[in-house]
Amino acid sequence: MKVLLINGSPRKEGNTYCALSEVAKTLENEGIEAEIVWIGNRPMRGCIACGRCKSGEPYPDGHIGCVFNDDNCNAISAKFAEADGFVFGSPVYYGQPNGSLLCFMQRAFFSNGAAVQNKPAAVVTICRRGGATAAFQSLQMPLQMMNMPIATSQYWNIAYGREEGQASQDTEGMQTMRTLAHNLAWMLRGLAGEKAPERETWQPMHFIR
Ligand SMILES: Cc1cc2nc3c(=O)[nH]c(=O)nc-3n(C[C@H](O)[C@H](O)[C@H](O)COP(=O)(O)O)c2cc1C
Image (cartoon, rainbow, N blue to C red; front, side):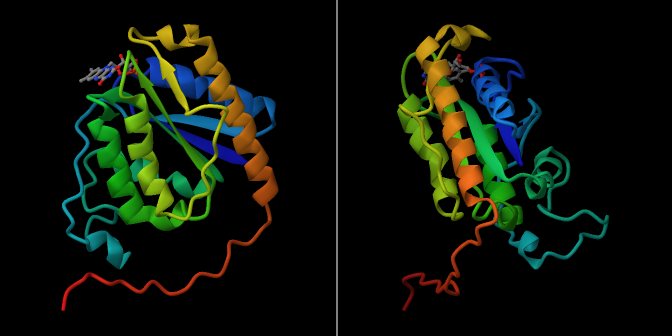
């Protein structure tokens, strides 16, 4: 089994990485492969709602997924299929998840959502002082509409730190990350081989008469 941990911070080895590393290390101790993927610090486009990705057809240059192929989105979302579970990590920016991670998730879930459906997942957020729970709730929203069972911990999955690496000194935060990893491993093992429930065909209702 494998868990993909997405580091949304523009700082490659900052505090988000620190928290995700604690989750990854604990998962590996449980015998679960863990890969941390950094979304990078280059511009990440937002979804333009063109809907072209929904056709599933390759584009003229041969790529599939989101119409925009000039950032990391398609390359990272292509890894979704090989993962059994996910952890999305974000620094807190103005009480919210950081913008480029939201851009990535919105495009990746819209264009390759089938590859995350029914797979256990969690989010973690890191801040200097405040806004972590608001960011945490916001980051969980897309998971909740992708039929992804959400792994929890002994507290909200948050940790504190400002300068890169400081979060490792947040001993309770790091313990929360380890507990999260144990719970995620437990869910993964429990659901392995279980078929997802049969679901009704979606009945879109746009409140238009
Ligand atoms: C643009 C920006 C906005 C921030 N907003 C907040 C905030 O609202 N609350 C907070 O406690 N820290 C805030 N911070 C601090 C970061 O959340 C904190 O330094 C965090 O550890 C960064 O994680 P990273 O090392 O993974 O990038 C902000 C930092 C930046 C760059």
